Length: 166
Image 1 (cartoon, rainbow, N blue to C red):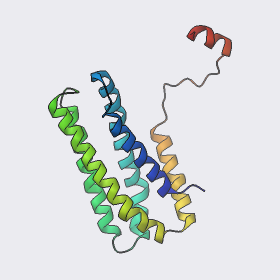
Image 2 (cartoon, rainbow, N blue to C red; image 1 turned 120 degrees about the vertical axis):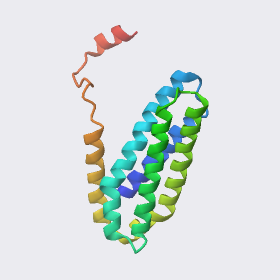
Image 3 (spheres, one colour; image 1 turned 135 degrees about the vertical axis):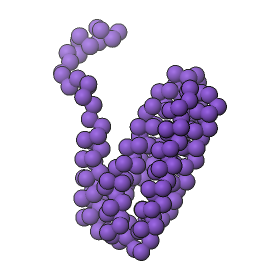
Image 4 (cartoon, one colour; image 1 turned 90 degrees about the vertical axis):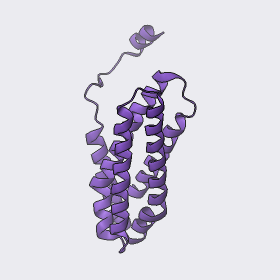
């Protein structure tokens, strides 16, 4: 069964791995590629939570639901601000690293708090059916916002592919 909380945990794990990749990155090209992808993932994750998860949390959670949602939106804004700040500086520069570090810290704090409070709260108060319905909504949102228009879906001839790429 799909469960929206599991999808959020999966996103959190991916975000942690992408930030950890900075620890081994070598050169501005790697940093640029890592950051461009991570900035998109951070923005998408926050937007999807705000569209799909937090409205449901506000309806299903305990009295702490409002505090959890407020904290999450504030955290998302801090992460967005750090992403915008990084965009103002050359990749690899000290101010860029400072902004990326701020995004990492804010994201780490946010997901730890969410995993400690909002997600368990929601799991306790939302039915499995609701969590499954939200997982479908989450997946639809992600698919709609990550559907690349430039990817060819044409079939390829294996022989031609191998010849061209060997």
